[in-house]
Image 1: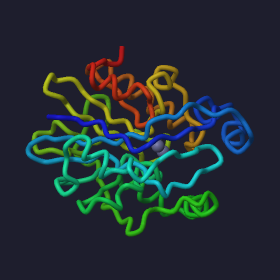
Image 2: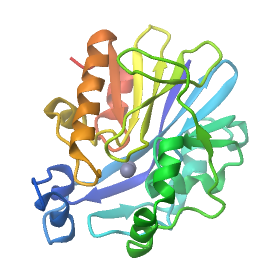
Image 3: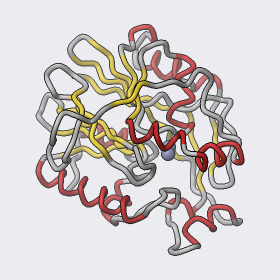
Image 4: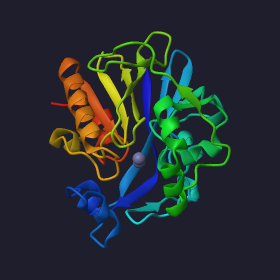
Length: 264
Ligand SMILES: [Zn+2]
Ligand SMILES: [Zn+2]
């Protein structure tokens, strides 16, 4: 198994996004003036295994529009085809795409891919809710043209600390697990590497490893309690299995994958 870290430009987010206040300030501060972070990566991941290439998320494109709490820095030459070329992967070789969730910086790159795409059933339901549609219009964050992923059903029973899962490889070494919080249908993809470690491609389950250890819900999730319960579950999984934890926007993710550093 080979796991390739792909990078499709960067994003700066408001400090209030990474370190939210409580109560009404949690989301209000996102829309008020405040300091910004350094550029954070926009990772997606290609997993070569069993003669197939699974893409986990598709990254951002140069067409990305800023929102009040995120500023995108993506050049056309940083989009998915260039990221794949850098890893020696032909876009035509992608067998399947699994999306962790529906946010633009994870799905916009789908315009470059013709493989089957799936996203969790719960996320599909969330996307269809009127409030979500309204927010995408207000924030000018449309889903990419032709966006029609198939529902990913987590019907394959428990996996580690998670009560449900979905196998993404014949040998069961790649599985999707539910990690709701950032969005209600968010999933993470766990790959059991050749050393038996679990590599968790965590999407936006957290922004950083620090946020996982701090058990800090983020500023955008609808219910912070759901998010905190997921963070506890991920930490429980890390206790059961040595796990390399790789959020999409953590500046330390690529280095942890390279070094094999597991969650202590
Ligand atoms: Zn997100
Ligand atoms: Zn994201």
